[in-house]
Image 1 (cartoon, rainbow, N blue to C red):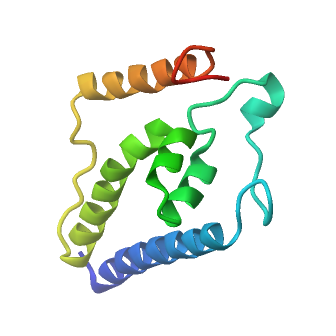
Image 2 (spheres, rainbow, N blue to C red; image 1 turned 120 degrees about the vertical axis):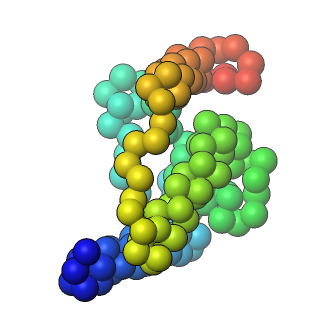
Length: 135
C-alpha cells in the first residue's frame, strides 16, 4: 500500500474515534428527551411501537454516567452488543495502525442469521406486555 493510502486509513480511524468522543461528550452533557438535540425514532413516531434501537441514546447517556442497570433497562440488546462493537472498533483500529490487512466478513452465514433472528426476536418481544418488556 502506498504512503498516501496508509495515511488516509489512519486519518479515517482518527476521525472515527474523534467523532465517537465528540458524540459521547455531547451525550454526557445533554440528557436525551430533556435537553440538547436528539433525533426522534421515526419507526416509533409512525407506528407507536419500539424499534430494536429505541432507548439506546438514553441507555448510552446512563452508561456514560456509570448507571449500568438503568442503561440495561433502556435497551438490554444494546448493552449485550456493546462489548462486541467495541471489540470490532479496537480490532479495526489495531489493524489500520499496524498497516495490516483488514479482514472483511469473517462471520459464517449461520451467525449472521442468528444475529438477525435475535434482533427480530428482541424487536417483537419488546413490544409485548410481558415481563421484562412492558410497553
